[in-house]
Image (cartoon, rainbow, N blue to C red):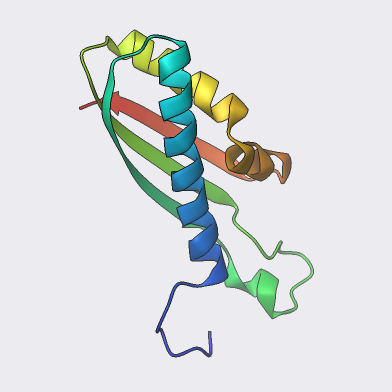
Length: 112
């Protein structure tokens, strides 16, 4: 998009912020829940139509869909992992900001 590919784009930084925020919230909330969180790894990707940034008024200039895959190392059950995920997503400021912007959030947290 005209740059020299020497650093992250602002939208890539936003996805990194989502990973960081989800990670921080998972650590805070796991303590509140007495959840055995040993490690969590995120893989976050997004779909976006660049026409929105190129003056096409019919396309929004930000993500249409974000995919959040988390692998949770824990002794807990998948049911407890699901509980943690729901609580994290409902309290993570970056996640909820994307939801408020009507970005489709596709979330998959699995026990590692």
